[in-house]
View (cartoon, rainbow, N blue to C red):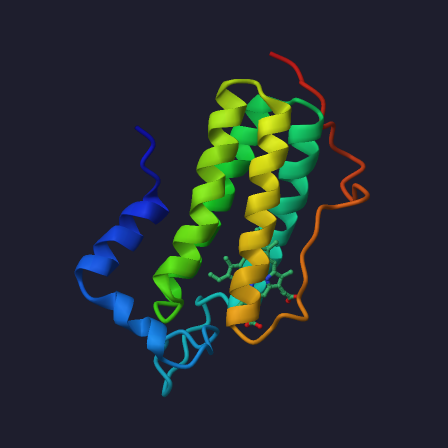
Length: 163
Ligand code: HEC
């Protein structure tokens, strides 16, 4: 059974009653852990974390298209870590929105294990939809994510690679 760190965090929070955060205002970008008097310089802004998510989202697509399944799993691991960082720092993000983003990551992982590029593309579409669902909920629906149409990382190969 696949159990990601994000999922465990989400489950733990639900048990702890953090699910009730859903009703509050959707300004997820204010980290409740940050000290307002002495703001910590090492708390990454959510926008910066999202910049990393955006990069991984692009690389993931080209790894799926290139049938580079080891790379797909590598990128998935980092994408999960990045989402986890967001969840830890920004506890006011509604848990179901994080869970909705985590689910398609599992679908992509299953497809990578099965070396199923078409299945990976379908799960990728669900992932992209989950990005936009959260953005709409956060009042930033104008940050509209779609499948990449060109590869900005021209110095990296997205084919099967070397063993
Ligand atoms: C659980 C909620 C959530 C999910 C899921 C989510 N985002 Fe975000 N995203 C946000 C929030 C909130 C912001 C605004 C952060 C800010 O401005 O401080 C944001 C901002 C962004 C930005 C703008 C960053 C910038 O500085 O230009 C990009 C790009 C982005 N997200 C990409 C993605 C991608 C790609 C995915 C899916 C793979 C994704 N996001 C999934 C909540 C989410």
